[in-house]
Structures are given as structure tokens and as C-alpha cells.
Image 1 (cartoon, rainbow, N blue to C red):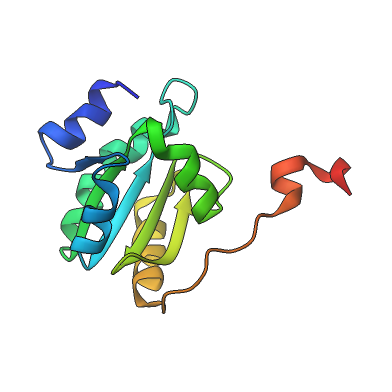
Image 2: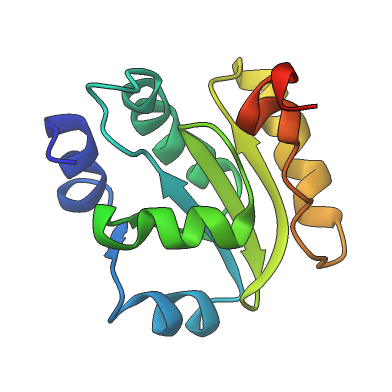
Length: 139
């Protein structure tokens, strides 16, 4: 995950890198959390775009605290939150799932989706869409 843009999220913008030791403390210690799942930015170059946009989004939603998911726990947490593409932003309130935004959006779409997600009641993450995971031939 080493990328200058991803590293700047920590050094310049104060986002926390979350691993197996720090994840629970962070998500349960902050009321509103957004988790950035960037995977490998070389394989998923849109992660760089999200890394540029995320600090601005956090400024517009002051209650949110941002964390970057370390590669060591990314697959385990991806399975828990059941999203199927990268980059992804997962939103939690008091450690409970609110929603996810995958891929890149334009500014107004991010703001609109985030407003709706943050107004939602906590719920279970949606089930996997097998067409997305396995392809249509899986049926």
C-alpha cells in the first residue's frame, strides 16, 4: 500500500492507519468513522483519486474521522462489509455499518451519497451480489 498519496493521508491529513491492533479502538472510540479501503493503488489507480478527495470530504463532514485500512486486515474487513470493488469508503456509526461508496464519484455525488448514508440507521451490510463476485456464468 505504500504510495506517496496514501502516505500523505496519514502524515499531512492525520488519518489513522488501522491494523488488527488499532481497528477496534478506532471504530468504537469515534462516533462517526469512514474507512478507506484502497488495496494496491497500482492495481486500483482510482485509489489515488479517492486519496486526494477524501481530506476535502472530511472537511465537509466534520463529525467524521477517517482511517486507512492496512493491507494486513483489508481482505478480512472487506468480507465483513461485503463490498466487491476498490477503492471503497465504508461508513460506521459507533462501530455499526451505515453504508459504502465504491469507486470514484464526482464531488456532488459523493456529498449526496454521504449525506444519505450518514442519515441512515445502522444495518447489516448487504449480501454479496453473486453476479459481481462470480460473473453471470455462475448461475
